[in-house]
Image 1 (cartoon, rainbow, N blue to C red):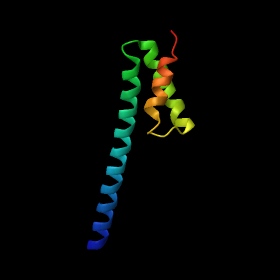
Image 2: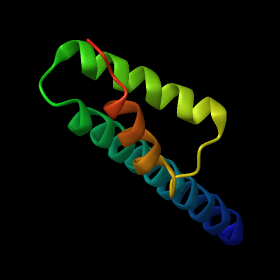
Image 3: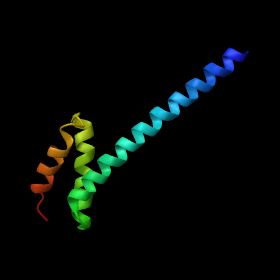
Length: 77
C-alpha cells in the first residue's frame, strides 16, 4: 500500500510539473508575439493569429522568434 501512494504521488507531481512547463512556454510565446505588436490592438490580434498559424505549421521554438519578427515586419494596417 505504501508503494502505491508513492507511485501515485510521484506521477501526480511529474504531471503537474510537465503541465506547468507547457503553460510557461505558451505564455512566453504569447508575450513574444504581443511584444512584437506594440500597443496597436489590430496588430496584436494579427500577431496572436500568426502564433496560432506557427503552432499549426509546426514551427520550432528555436525558429519562432525570427518567424514572428518576419510576420510583424510584413504587417500592413
